[in-house]
Amino acid sequence: MSQYALPELYQPKPVADNEAILIANGDLRLSANQKCWAAQEAMEQAVTAAFAKEGITVKRGHPYDPAQKHGFIGSQKHGMAVFKNIHPDAKLIVAESVWQYSHHILHGLRHHRGPILTVANWSGEWPGLVGMLNLNGSLTKMGVKYSTIWSRDFTDNFFLNGIRQWIKAGQIDHDTSHVRDLVLGKLPEAERVLGEALAAQLGREKAIMGIFDEGCMGMYNAIIDDEMLNPTGVYKERLSQSALFAGMQLVRDAEAQKVRDWLDAKGLTFITGTDEESELTNAQIFDQCKMYIAAVRIADEFGCATIGIQYQQGLKDLSPASDLVEGLLNNVERPPVYHAETGEELYPEQAIPHFNEVDEDAGLDALATNRVWNAIGFDPATTLHDLRWGEHYSGPDGLGGTVDEYVWVFLISGAAPASHFIDGYAGAISQRQPPMYFRLGGGTLTGISKPGEIVWSRVFVMDGELHVDLGRASVVHLPKEETERRWQLTTPQWPIMHAVTHGVSRDQMMARHKANHLNVAYAPSAEAADQALAAKAAMFAAMGLKVHLCGDVTVG
Image 1 (cartoon, one colour):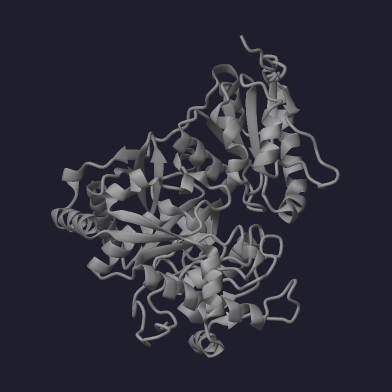
Image 2 (image 1 turned 30 degrees about the vertical axis):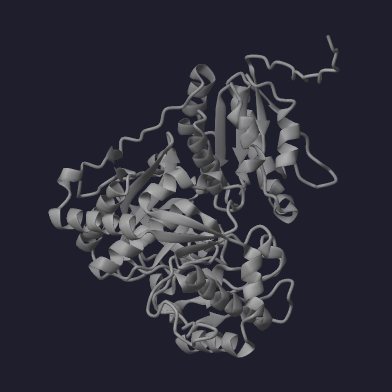
């Protein structure tokens, strides 16, 4: 009988019942990890102190790296090395105050047997809440059990009662009574028939989702397996960002200049300078105009009904940001683009739904929204916002009225359509993306979202099936000073939406939401928004998704 040298399996040390291991997952970009480390360190100290008062000693699962100047897990390779030394039965805390790449740690969480707790600080400074929600959505998709909690300073009763339950029972129960399953028979007949007809058309004729490199920024939750997506009638065209960059090189300078001239004529304000490292330059804008034309031409070449550009990673090392491009694509009124050979205008007077960061759940959602809103006769412009942060506001609204509501900050890196802004293009500005995330710059498409009625939604994967949450919200106007304050507490270069969700509290939204993003689309009135939501719910149900209504929704 042959004798082989068998690999030695390393066994990490068990963790005592009164101990927990804390890990901090971070960005893939060193500059972001370094700049955000101070906030993470402060958060960890507060979390550790809170658990100590409950008799739990929190130990860090990986050290601070003096050479890297931060203590985050900065790659999947790093994450595997960390989990090698974490006992699978340990109480595990994932503490997040920054954007994090979930795939750095999903391998360890997938196989972890002990209770998992994701924690975020209630702060808009860095996208910690956004990062935690992405991780939660990814764990939900994987079918991994976890608990989640959030706090401003980790001394409030909501947080303390939550961690006490987690320490004792290994889970935290949140109120999600605002969610109910759609009862199809309760939908208005006209909207139900419309939604079902649109789903039948999509199922019969099919549609193509163009994806410029799949899987962005660790967002495992934002990938829909083909076997799940195809029954809806949607099929992927897997494109490459290198092809997009190559297409940019084929765009003539005169064509790019016409796009810039069109935007200038519409009143879009570009805040420019000459320092490529820190300011938006005309050269960066010129490249973005070329990217816009190349994206439309590639979408036409492959017959795409919707497209998503990853930008991070890869393209960020070649060209300025894609966000201005994405905002233009999502708008019906946008610079015309013509076929390079025939001169035919491509997608005339149409929005080309773009899903930021190739979030395929948002792409499927945007495609359905586009079909429903066009059929009813509403502006089909959509955007996906980060569920970034929020605070209660009580005071004047700046228009002669008052607001006394919990007002969310919906914020995204610039891919919002101009029709969502006060005064459209004339009320929009483009300024350089933060160098921390966008080394080669590029302009945003930034504005303040106009007051009005919206439908919000999120497609996600749970229990091996596609689900969608649908809800209603109002966009409110806030005084200039309050808007500026909220911008300065988050990312002032990015477009902002002041949203009041109907019948969904802050904690209910956080407990239920399975993603960092949510989609929004305007309707002309509250009644019209209910009408559109009903048709969209019917369409999704007929496409095979499990439909859930959230909060005060007057249909279904």
